[in-house]
Length: 360
Image 1 (cartoon, one colour):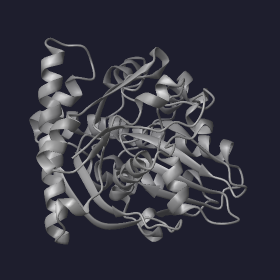
Image 2: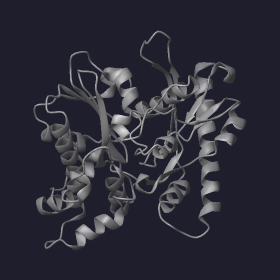
Image 3: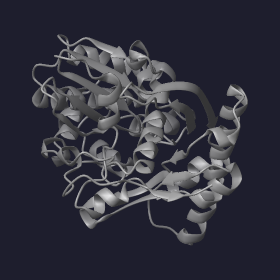
Image 4: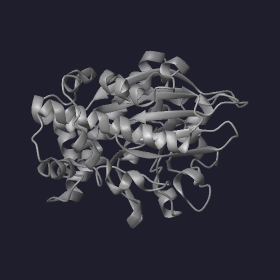
């Protein structure tokens, strides 16, 4: 998995036992994005010259990194490629427009199958979009398989570049949606003003003060009040969106104050959406790269004072491994001919088998 934070490729080796027992992560490996590839993926989020050629080259470079991660996993476990049933390869999202009937994840699954000698399942989102769905989030079904607690309303928050919630109700219902920005704007602002690709531990933003007027203006964006099913990405929340809000400020904020406000935006938008959708929540499980941002987690807990918030490792899977594990699980669903989407989450016309299969 390479998510919207654009930090690199995470891979896991997932054991999916028979008999309904929860899947188990056996190993984890990661490779960071070279700076040039990260910049290219960011650039491909908007129109530019020679996009088709550049997209193909970026997809091949991503595939090479993914193949390296697969090799690392096999080496660390001593397994041969033949022992692995399939690779679930999500690809890198560069455009997400379900309102126009498409979503675009760059990948080269045929090349990955050739390089690894393992079957590849890819292109998970497009079938759900074709069926009238948002194509996201796709992880709630996996979250129920590993994080549900009998008799409790449990929520799972994935803090990637954008934040999404899975709502696991005690009565068996599962809902989910994107709440809005996660790390994407925080990372952008940190890079612009510190030269670092992210604000490590949220330490830089923790030294700022959230600006109430700016926060209110950003929270007035129509996306936050839109009912689910809904999904979002850089097509909605991007640097120009932030710059427009900053330009309309009557008083100028320091860069650290803006970072603090962006952190408050993520925390407040998550908390508001969660308390509205699941008023009797018993616990919140947090995963994704943003789970390592201590300032963001402090703000989130402050916005949810009555809700115990804990990281996913307390439930058996470290925060940075959950989404990769979800797409391994979705690959298994595809190979078994089972649906991977939840229509109540995405808004699709019905359950659909997700993904295209590239045999070894």
